[in-house]
Amino acid sequence: MSNTVDELVDLIRDDLDETNVADVSDADILQKLNRAQRKGVLKIIRNYDSLFIANEDITTVSGVSDYDFPDATYAGKVKKLELIESSLPRRIDRVWYRQSGRYVRAGTTTRPSKYELVGTKIRLFSTPAGGLTIKVWYVRKPEALVKSQGRILSSGIDSATSQPYVIVDTLGADITTASTLLNNYVNVIDHRTGRVKGTVQIASINTTNKQVLFKAASLTRSTVLGKTIAIALPTTLEVDDYISTIHGTCVPEIPEAYHDYLTQHAVVAIKRSKGEPTQEDFAALKDEEDDIKNIYQGTEQQMKVAMRNPFFNRSTR
Image 1 (tube, rainbow, N blue to C red):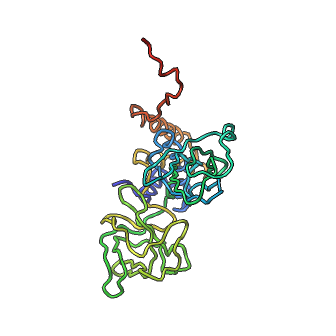
Image 2 (image 1 turned 180 degrees about the horizontal axis):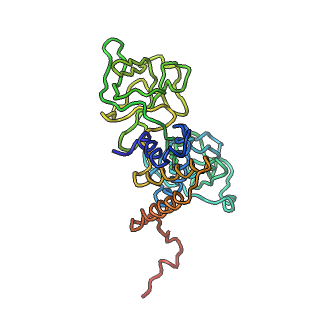
Image 3 (image 1 turned 120 degrees about the horizontal axis):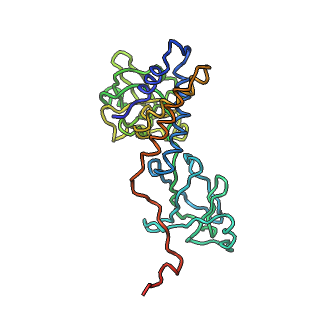
């Protein structure tokens, strides 16, 4: 099981030596942890962008060339486009803006073969006909780090209300039954990977038996913060999964090998903000950075040279 965000917060407090660094709230630590995660993810995706790879389908509109990046795209990293025909993918090649003019054609096509990235838009060449399915592969943003609102001990359907429920080990203080507040919506978190398995709306909370019931109908909102609100718990839910507020995940999605980097980065940032000396802590952070640079040494390289030049194909005999 990976470290939870709550455990990372405790590790940071241990390293801070709070007899000297006072008045550090959990909110302060989470802010610094999320900054550290952003830095860490940039380091990871240089060598392992498939960790956060995701895809989303776009349906074209006739005569429209430009389409928005998927909402969760991280740092503008759209990696690949495919035209889906009869359930089979056909690659669409990327071109750069200096080259794109040669691919402009009058009218529309049912087989766009090129695309370019313009700001936060994907531009298809030639202009597509309507109703085509374009699969966009992109690097997604990791979920923000938030504290756990409970580890799931069991789940089921309430016999009196027919509402799905979970029973947790400890009820978090942040969740609420007030439907006007965002914390009325919770993510179900995979305890191994930190991925969000699903998002549901709280109907009621029983503090005696630590049971949280979720709405099975009459949702206040169908989507919140870009997430679809379900009327059932995810079928992949397991004992030891977690619930967290809709704002993020309570289990970091980045590999556990990076967790020491996250905590050390946060320690340095907090001490700097409090005017405390950071020389030794900064040296330790540099060691952590050196370590994570070496994580992918010896792994298979995914970059390949495309042998499109005819000279590559000449016989040497």
